[in-house]
Structure formats: structure tokens, C-alpha cells
Amino acid sequence: MNFNEVAFEFAAGRVDQLPESDMPEIVFSGHSNVGKSSLINKLVQRKALARVSAQPGKTATINFYKLKEFRMVDLPGYGYAKVSKAEKDRWAKLVEGYFAQDRQRPLVIQILDLRHPPTDDDLHMIDFLYRGGFNFAAVLTKSDKLKKTAFEKQIEYYKDIFSTIEHVPLIPFSAQTGFGNDEIRKLIET
Ligand code: GDP
Image (cartoon, rainbow, N blue to C red; front, side, top):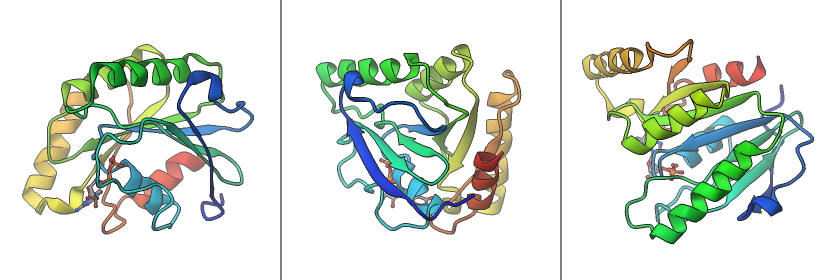
């Protein structure tokens, strides 16, 4: 599968702007600042396809990136405290509207920070994906920031968290070292 030919396609700020679903979509979801842009860039070996944000919570659009055989769908990051209620409502309407559409959506990649427990917003998102019957995997990012013992402890912690729901692949990842990149690519390929 070709991960290198990729181009930014479209940013949708409203449900009626979403492009037609004519290709499989790999969806990326996560808290603002979790490292979603960094992961997308690493996956396709590009420095700045998705903008690594200095200002968390700024991206309130769903961004589409087109590759040869699929699209990457970058959901706006959630959970940024300083965002207004109106903006949060807009986020919810946009994201729920996207998931309500009948689209080719083989995999959602839910990104979590390996160092920390999931936030309430993370748990809400996971619950939403689970209840909606979406196939999803959890990528546990920023793993380079942990030493071996802490790393293993956090992996066990996350295994425990996900043990109550049916098989969810857990992939530790680092955008800095590229650790886990091949595993995510393999998951997308299958
Ligand atoms: P987004 O808001 O979820 O798109 O997050 P970004 O990709 O913009 O990353 C937020 C911050 O975390 C940036 O300063 C990144 O450099 C940093 N970051 C992201 N992923 C990693 C990682 O795997 N390891 C380390 N050490 N830093 C990371």
C-alpha cells in the first residue's frame, strides 16, 4: 500500500461540506495536543502535511487527505478547555454529523497519551465509537517520554482499561522515534 503519495484535499467546517464518500476512510481522533498531527505526518513521512499545532484547539474542521487507495480523515481535536460552549457544540454537530453519514469507514484510530489516563472526553469518544459499532484501534502516543518500567506499567494500565470491550488493538507509538509506525501501517493495510 502506498503511504507516500498524499495530498491535502479538503477542510470541512460543516456537515454539508463533507466530500462524497467514494474511498475507504481511516479516521484519526483525539484530544487536542495529544499528537494527532504528528502521527499523521509520521505515517506518511511528511513534515507538515497536518499542522503540528502551537495553538491547541484551533483546528475546528475535519481535514481530508487523499492517498492512492484511501483517505485519511483528521477530526478536530476535542477537549481543549479554553474553547467556548458554542464552539464545542459546533464540534459535536460536525463530528456526530460525520459519523452519522453512511461512509466507507473501515478503521478509526483513537489516539491517547500513553503517559496519562484517558480524560473524560476520551472515554466519551471511546464509548461513542464502541456503541456506534465502529471498528477502532487505540494508538498510545508519546511513548518515547517514558522509561522502560513506566512504559510497561502504562501498557498494562491501558490493557486493563480496554479489557472490558472486545478486541481493540493497542499500539504504542512515538512520532519522535517512529516506534509503532509499521504496526499502524499494517493495521491500515489489513
Ligand atoms: P495535535 O494537536 O493532536 O495535532 O498534536 P500535535 O501533533 O500538534 O502535537 C502536540 C505536541 O506534542 C507538539 O509539541 C509535538 O511536538 C508533541 N508530540 C507529538 N507526538 C509526540 C511524540 O510521540 N513524542 C514526543 N516527545 N512529543 C510528541
